[in-house]
Image (tube, rainbow, N blue to C red; front, side):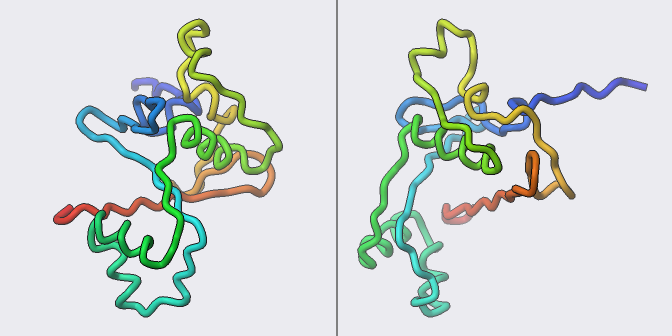
Length: 145
């Protein structure tokens, strides 16, 4: 019987590397970028309009621009800060991080965002202490994906 290696909180965060410009390598050959939207009100849209939002990346961005929604790509620091906030939603821990700290410390970006541990309920939600729980939803807007 083999022993199962315990994963650290850092090991359970599913990306390999984050760059300062916000591009993240999830696995070899697969990269992501986070885009922040403000003031989206789906209640004002018809179902057809809601579907149109997810038809393609260019259509997606143009649709929100027509609605006057502010769209901004997050840089690496802002993206890590967002993740830190999700991972520490039941705590009042400020995000402290500088790219200059990585090389001298030998730490990775995950060390600055990860909580001390995760608890996974039914494989779909994650949380830490108290009553704060979250879930992840991934939407792929690529054509034919």
